[in-house]
Image (cartoon, rainbow, N blue to C red):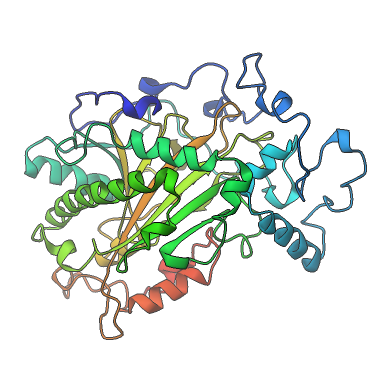
Amino acid sequence: MLCLSSPPVPVTCRHLTVSDHRRPAGTSDIRRGFYRLQWGTDKKSSQLQSTHKHPSRLHPLYSSKSTGARNSTIMASAAAAPDSDRAALLRAFDESRTGVRGLVESGVSTVPDLFVHPDPYASVPLAPPGVSIPVVDLSLPAPLAAAAAAAAARDWGFFYLVNYEALVPSDYPAKVLTAVRAFHELPAPERATHYGRAMGGGVSYSSNVDLFRSPAASWRDTIQLGFGPTRPDTERIPPVCRSEILEWEAHTTAVARAVMALLSKGLGLGEATLEEASCLEGKVMVCHYYPVCPEPDRTMGLVPHTDPGVLTVLAQDGVGGLQVKHTNEDGESYWVDAKPVPGALVINVGDLLQIMSNDKYKSVEHRVVMNSCEEERVSVAVFFNPGKRGDSVFYGPLPELVSSENPPKYRSFTMSEFLGAFFKRDLASKALIEHFKL
């Protein structure tokens, strides 16, 4: 599947440069801050103008110049509309059961107001050329790999992981990315049979997990699966991607085990410390699909946020759009492209690992920008969390990391309290980790 199916490039523990992985010509130039639509003359770039020029059915939020005043009332600015009107629009979108992909199939030529983010890319500048997230090479001797992983987790909260072939077959992750794409591009009536927000049997397919809580919806659809501590009903997983999803869950668990061992050693602890804390046992997989967008400068694929769990393992196709917020030694913050790199997975620290490490590792904001109007983006992320969830099981800074010289920075809590705090806020809220600070 695109560049991730290529053989891995031999690298050592170094920083990849942005110039090593330039975008193909014709895409939006986000390095200079241009998020304009750049329609070309090729087949892909004219997709929204030609393929869906005459939609076969009308989506509840469909709006274009050719429809005249038919939808002028329903598409009035959501920001200015009363809450009841916005809620009705959200319900209409959700009840269409076809997600953002359904909007594109209906022929929208503008981003519906429900999806408009006010000035989404203006708050923090982009990184200067040559800045990239670090690389950790799993083929290095264990002490060197552990030191590299710990430095990346401490300074960046993100890194590329390469040379993991001993843990993952050569046809992955390309195989699971292809299968996830195949589901999201099924005909709308077939997708609609799977749509629903409830995690029935540990599986759901919907658009925007925080659709009814966030101030603006984002341009993506998602299959979500809970793999632990309770396994999903595999019959609820769409057949077109079932076997690939199940296989990828096993492969990512092997990767996460290896990474957690490195990060445990980087804290000066035994390599099994995080695994013994059940951090491999709670697992959620999200299979994101970011459709072609007619106005990429007006919406986002995923708003700036931190991941709540311990560790995230991400596979992405070759389209790109993931950006990581980094603050350098001078206190300057900017967004750094985490461009797709052949043979690399993306690893990031979650809020819970920042707490457990007592701030030795950091969970940082990241986002997905709508930086291309030419091709859909697909990614699969697996979030690892503690699997022990009893009311008598508490989490907080690891006892080995706490002393009179280094007192705990966070209070202890149960996973029930932690997850409850997470689900009460919208995705972009920064309040989760602050909720547990002493």
